[in-house]
Image: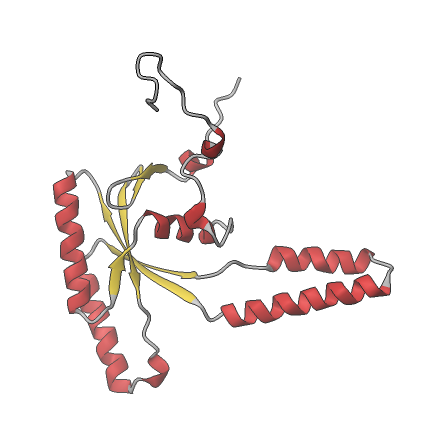
Length: 195
């Protein structure tokens, strides 16, 4: 029998650590960045922002930049509705399906400009105290360079991964282990209420 790998192991994920997401190549700590609307800034201010980002990246070489849609994609739903419209014979149902399609288009248009920006610090082969110091140093330097950031907690990271892997908008509510809510705690006879 072949040894089947889990999705988690195929992506090189080990689980959640104290400071972020543990992977086979180190621990990833994420910072959510409040975006700046550059359409209202002068050219000089935009140049300043770019220079600050360049300086920041040279000061923290392990810093990675991530940009994601901050909402789900409705393409699968829209394909399904199109297929239903093509197969449907009832004009009333076709009209309802077209209204659904229009509704999804409107939602997607509203959310298409919603982006989520993050910085990621990758640490490898370091003790917890060293990781903590590196994360705090990175956070301080990022803030000093004019970026409004906050370190993402476990729920924030779960939501980001759920959107990235196109699972759910409510990723922060996804269990750490699939099916964990269906497992009943095992009671020890010597310790009747131990879990």
